Length: 265
Image (spheres, rainbow, N blue to C red):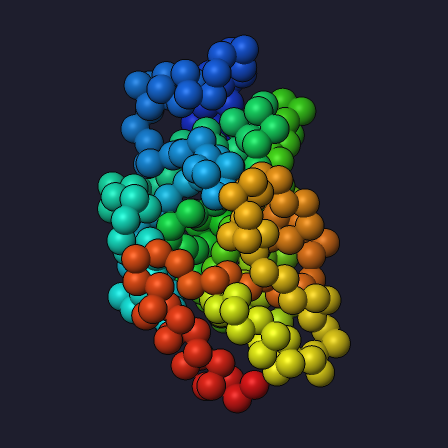
């Protein structure tokens, strides 16, 4: 494991390198960063998110309890699969990749989604070293008067298990949404055609401040970058509902239905 001093030097080197190029286009900056450093796949935004995005390998970085792993997860097929398959969990590589992503967010004004694919686990447990590294990166960025724009992520860890770490990340501005959690800041897969059924089942939950269908799925004119009040907002306490998507969306829909039955809602 890298020492804190070594990490700080590495992070500062990346930040200063990007600051020198801030007048260039984001694609040019990414190209030069890839030439200088060994990085995981890193995107500047697709048609749905419009945000900077990072990747971890699906499986090794996922909690074993995830109901979608090998059972309809959209990251295990298609273009996202091709990206996450190339990612590694090498600490140096991840530290530099996350620094590039968060610094680019600060200088471009684009939001940053940590882990478009993959999660916050290592060897089946919460990767506390990764969390500490994200905190270190953002705190170091502040020394340069830089702050990433609404960084956000999702976790399949149980709400109560991950909540202390979500609070830690929230302290540096990272919003965590809880996948498969039918509660505040939850992010669930459920057919938009049946949204009224879900709202009826959860009508007694006063702690959920609204149930919303993902706007980026409802309109091609809207991306996560445009969305102002849901997954990327620290103040959000509602439930975001994603229509089953990806090439295995039928399996994903079945998994979400089975989960709701287990929760007896």
